Image 1 (tube, rainbow, N blue to C red):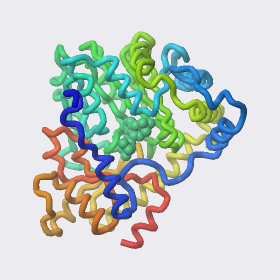
Image 2: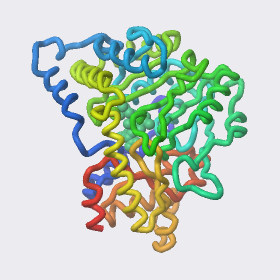
Image 3: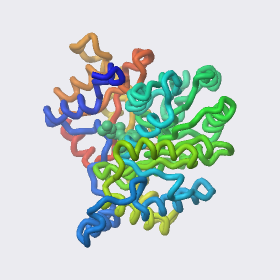
Length: 404
Ligand code: PMP
Ligand code: GLN
């Protein structure tokens, strides 16, 4: 095998999704909703596949024209600048491919990429495959209290110490997966000041941008002064419209950066599925018209999820787990220390404790979750062995808990 894939053969989604299926466990692990997308995008998809021939064939390689046009209009209004639909946007096969194109296009051998922990696990293998070196900086819970994701913070001094002459990029994920932290303006300003000072790119993964709770506000770092020119903002229709199986994603940024992503895309994937892009374009058109109104899906979805978040937190507390209430996203981390103290030692001493605990939970309680140490570097995973991650974008949560 090629050296670039050395050491990245294990994958937490493959491992735990298979185990969950094998034991027929209730799956609160892998993040996807167990309810359908809103009817306006479903209908748009049906219409796209039921008429004529054009939407069954290839479309423009860098993004179906109706989709890039509405994405430019929609996000242009949010960042407060003109976004060029043809030059500043690339449509991809999910946010995964947008991330992959970004790293392949911009990271060279020996470049350093700063990753904020805990992080969505694919950043690390993608940086490695591009020849880059990951440099980690953890969010740490405040000493005195740790009730919500806002209590987990970066030390500005520690963050600054990670920037060197080799730093090419920093990856920001807000709302964060798995913690649910929504970075506030001051925190984004610290990151942006460092990016500008050291002439570093910012890769901003914002797939959960509409999912914020209790007044937490998602801010696009690309909208901060001096950041548009150096930020690649990544989004996902899977998360936006609760249609993870459609695999439509995008990268948005200045054309001097995006043109390099297009080079990777045109020489690898080339086209993305046309009908799904057509449906997503209709979805954004509808949301553009409803923006900020009570009918907007981007208002209704987080309002519905907020109720599930509350319910899950109560359930976890009732069985002795300590939840960290997320400000955004659809995951909740919970501290398992109290249950651990009452359990006999679990098999698999060479594995982190949370992995052993999750396997025990799947096999004995038929409940699948994800061990949080999977979202840490090898260096730091030992410092965070006592958390597991739940997905609360599920309808039937209460049904499960009443059976435990
Ligand atoms: N980034 C984050 C933070 C994610 O949680 C996910 C999973 N949805 C992705 C990227 C990949 O998104 P997609 O399913 O659109 O490829
Ligand atoms: N982003 C989703 C999660 O964090 C799904 C990841 C995956 O299936 N690879 O659960």
